[in-house]
Image 1 (cartoon, rainbow, N blue to C red):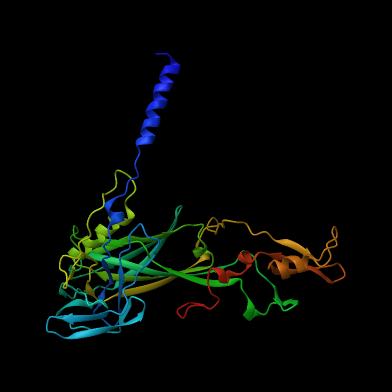
Image 2 (cartoon, rainbow, N blue to C red):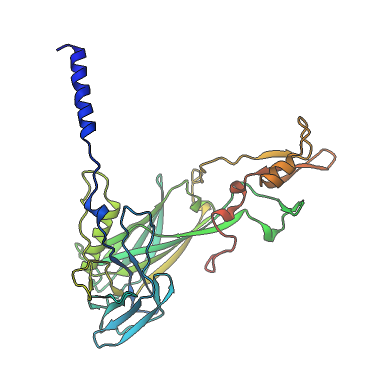
Length: 388
């Protein structure tokens, strides 16, 4: 067969394959089920217990969240004593300083607004040892934050960490002037929009185990790594680390979630598996419930790191370079009032005045608001815990 004949056969086969292709609709997309998701820890110490209730969402929908509101949530011990939690925002339930008896076992009991009941298994209190130290290491990939802890009694063995970040940063350009009505005047110190603060909470799952070690010592476990180009490291960075002791079963639950959410993407990664927790339906025992409730006290530690600790190549890189324009009251080429057009009509922020050789303001350097106003990504006021 000649080349033209081979080509025609290939084209016919390709057409047949495309024509026979049918859309694939997995059962998970069509499944109507919406299951309860329970997140949080029963805090046995003086810190608050916060439990979040939500519902799973069909992946074919466009919804982003579905919190379970108006539920009755209580912590109960085996003797029948209960401690109610109050809903302080949609789907979030709070109890302050339970200070539980460490000799008893506890569970979480939930009754939804639809009268469906759920409960976790009774779990013994598992004390969390203090955090020994938080260290950091400067690497080519960024700032790596590590944790160190230990338990002399060798009784913890399984750990989980979460963290809250805070950082100070500044805008790309500093605005010395501000628009007030029809005037442009010098910006007062309390009106500055150059320095801001921002924060975030951990979204990754960080686990550690000393099960295979003779001593219960955690040494230099990586918590997070921050890109050297991140705005978080521009001025000062802070991390509040939270440490939880977990049981072996709870550790395996979180390890399974980590594999299902963070380690998928190639044929060599772990395959998705069912998340089996310790929360069960009472009204409908066959109904799946997602979550694992442990009972422990939370240990915390905070550190601050300033930018003078970083090498010169640690600086933020922005997606768009800030374009600073020169806006004159009278454009020398067009005669137009560029100050009126760019600043008063288009909303450019005046950066600094343009002064003539005679000392007269003849216009302003100006830039788009996203280059000048740090409040688009943060807030002016420092957090209460911030070290000045």
